[in-house]
Length: 323
Image 1 (tube, rainbow, N blue to C red):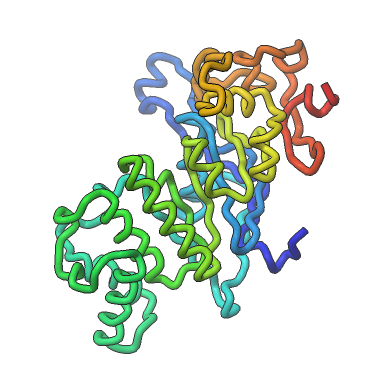
Image 2: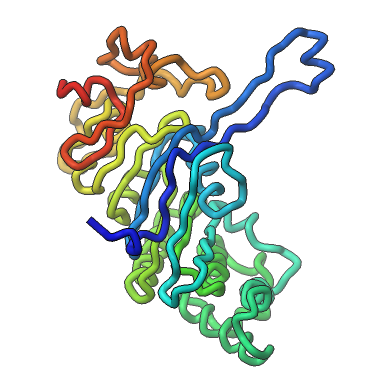
């Protein structure tokens, strides 16, 4: 087990709730109660230095909100978030790689200015000449050319724009990157290139990743550990190999059953049962009970606690009871 100093991130009972009520006058006239969206509700996790933790789940489960919490783009409603120190003993600056490379870059700025902005803001280089040299190094590091610094984002493909986003994140000398579905907007062949680049950079610089995705095939390829989210909570967390080989939570089993199997393409697969409930009015008890084929009476009323089973964390009454 890693020592405390080997963790770059620890989150404990992290929650992020949003007031999504109608305007006060409308709510008063129609006598409606306030409405709260519990996008993240009691998430605890730890990320060892140099590793990749992937967070998976269907759309609307809270993955992107959790990503924003981890980099400080939104404030937690409750819980604690602690960062380790960087390799130089200084303050850790987590950075984010966004999902859409077409929207995350300023279209009015040249690429050189985009990559140079964090260097200038954080005062990481002594002179404009040093900054320019660093920008050239970063562009070449991610597979682009130093001459690309003079071009605008619209002159690049989606995969090239995501390389620019990675260069911008590395410009802060970041060691911890939160990647919010960084390849989902790209073609399959380009996805592989970006994933290989991220893997190479991790090995070369000892980077630590939190990788948000709904693509389980990608997750299996890049992860050391996987956390499965459902309606704002982590329902299972385990080493990647263990989770894919022997999932415990019924929701994890349902997700993994959707992955095509080239060795047995005609195997019987259970279809995804139902839809994700309204997160504003989630089911009582275990929030997955409305879709679970193994539901029992207590699942409908009692929220399951996190149980440690065989070195993994699972939030399920049946798994905790050894069923």
